[in-house]
Image (cartoon, rainbow, N blue to C red; front, side, top):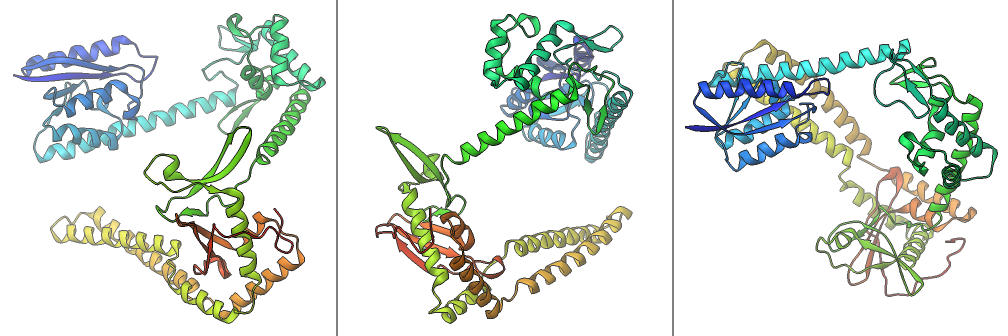
Length: 494
C-alpha cells in the first residue's frame, strides 16, 4: 500500500480553519478511494501561494519528500500546491525525481505525455487567477482611496475607526501628537528628550505603553496628522481629519532635514577611504575595504582583503591606509605630469587599448549569441514537424531582434575600435593644465587618473591608469610599499 501526505493551504485571514478542514476531509476521502495511507498533514494558514519559500509547512514537506518519507502528495486542487508556474514546476520536479506524485483530490489526475500539457494549463490558470485577483484588489483599494474610504490595516495613533468605517480623531491620543509637534518645533530639543519628558509627564502610547524614540519619530514624519492620506499615486485629503496644521508639519520636516544632513556630514568626516572600489588583492583578486581598529587608545586605519575579512582563505596582510593612498596619489601625479616620454606612453596606451575587452560590447555579444541559439532551436523544432503558427511568429520576432542587435554591436565596435594619438595627447595636456592651476586633493587626483591598484604580498604595487574616452591604460607604474613615500608633491594635499 502506498503512503501519502496531505498539503492544505488558505490565502487570507478572511478564510478560516474550516477551509483547511474541508480540504483535508476531501483529500482523505480521495486517499481512501485510491488505497493511499495518509501518514501526515502539512498546512499553511493565511499565506499566499505565490511564493513557496514563504510557506514553512510547504518547504518542510519538500524537504521530507527529498528524504522520500512518502510516495504521494495530495492537494484539494492544484492551485493549493502553488499559484506560481515557476514554483510549481520546480518543486514538482524535485518530488518527481524522488518518485513522488502530486495528486489532486478534485481534479483529473492525467498520466502520460498529456499530463505535461494539462499541468501547464492548470498552473497557468492558477497564476492568472492570482495575478488577476491582486489587480482587482488594487483597483478596489485605489477606488477606496479616491472616495475617502478606509482601506484596512492599522489606524494611525491619534485616530479611531467608527463602526461605519469612518476615521475620527481620538482626542486622548491626539493630545500626545499635538504635544510632540509643539515641543519639537518651538524648543531646541531632541527626539530622545521629548520621549523622556512626555513619559515623565504620564503621556502614553496605545494600550498604556510608554512612548519610545521610534514612536515619536514616526509621529513627526506622518503626514496623516495634517490630513494627507496616500495610496499608490492617489492623494486623499478627506479620510483623515487633521490634528495639526500643514505649517506645523512642514516646520517639523525642515528641522528633521537639517538634522539628517548634519548627521550625514559628520559621519562622512570620520574616515574616508579613497581607494575603495579600485584597490585589489594581487593574490586572490578580491577588492580591499576600509578597516579601522583601536589598541591602547591608538586608532589604526588599514585596507583589508575582503576574502581575509570574511575568512575565505586569503592571508594577504593589512595595508596601511595613509601609506598606500599617498603612494598611489604621488605616482598618479608624477605619471600625468611627466611629458618626457609622451610619445612612448601614447604608443603603449594605444597598443594596450586594442586588447581591452569593453564590458558593454562583451555583454551585447553574449545577448546576440543567446538570440541566435533561440532562433536555431525554433528552426530545429519546425524542421522536426512542430510547425505551429506561434513558432513561426516567434521566429520572425527573433530574426528582427537579431538584426537590431547586430547593428547596435557593429556601431559600438566602430565607436570603441580606435583612439587617436591626438585625443590622448589632448587629454594629457588638459589634465596637466588643470593640475598646475588647481589645488587638488588626494581624493581628486586618484579619481581623475587611477583605474585600478593591485597590491601583492611582496609589497609590489601595480597602478593602472585611465586615459582618453574613459578607457584604461597599461600597468605602467610599479611601486613598492617598502620604499619611502613623498610627503608632499606640488599642490597635492590630503
